Image (cartoon, rainbow, N blue to C red):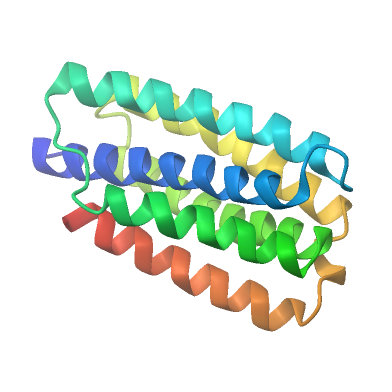
Amino acid sequence: MSDRRSERMLRVDQAGEFGAVRIYAGQLAVMGNRAPHSAEIAVMAGQEAGHREKFDRLIAERGVRPTALQPFWHVAGFALGAATALIGPEAAMACTAAIEEEIDKHYTAQLEELDGDDPQLGAMIEEFRGDERAHREIALAAGAEQAPAYPLLSGAIRLGCRLAIRLSERV
């Protein structure tokens, strides 16, 4: 595997974890700590912050340039979190379920591409994929599919997530 591909993986994965932290920050800013699912969101936000810290360290160690879109993801992530929370607690959970579905696919594809070539990065991705899968299950159990217009909301968020992945790999 080329160093360039490894750099792209790190760039996009760090951006994704950064975006996840911002989404949860937006949701908690709207919902506070007493709304339905706030406790679950706070726990997931903490895990995402831990993921981001580990990717931040690896990016620094390897001298990889973060995405130039980070200022945009800072605002867009918070806005997505706040918007879904304004719709309601189930919409906030629908956001998590949709994103984590795409991230599971993304991390799985990365692991297949790595095929053991970068054990340090592969171990991180595998660990984080497990957390993301658990987040999706938590969101579904919390009523994500009961969100207003769930298929449309989920589809739009998943499409946006795929677009964010492609852009963050390259820019």
